[in-house]
Length: 131
Image (cartoon, rainbow, N blue to C red; front, side):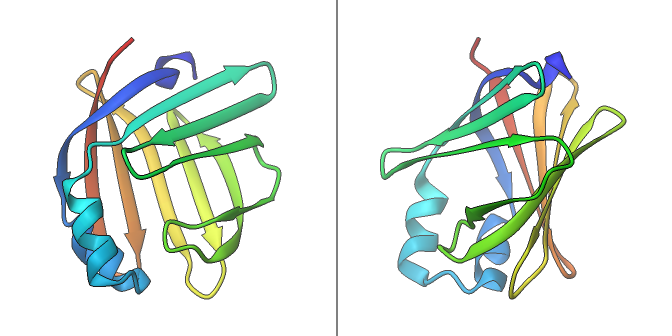
């Protein structure tokens, strides 16, 4: 899935505040998140993948292999079990904890489209490629 590899900068976000609210993120953190323009860097070397998300507030990185469960801290700070699979041209991430979250990453007209779902709450964020 080389087409997803690279650096991507957020340029459009829909319903992200509602998604964060459904997760239980405080209003202060939601306000900060709504003003930040994260850069996501996706790397792939053989079986090893990584996704690094950088904002002015913090940088977080996950390293994984497709289909293998690992632990990570969700955006709200809760430690969850996660598995990421390649389904067609999409990277599909499932987070299992107190709430089940789905994050789908795919290319859409040359942009990285990230769809975050929690129950019936769906947020779509679009990123443009930096390099």
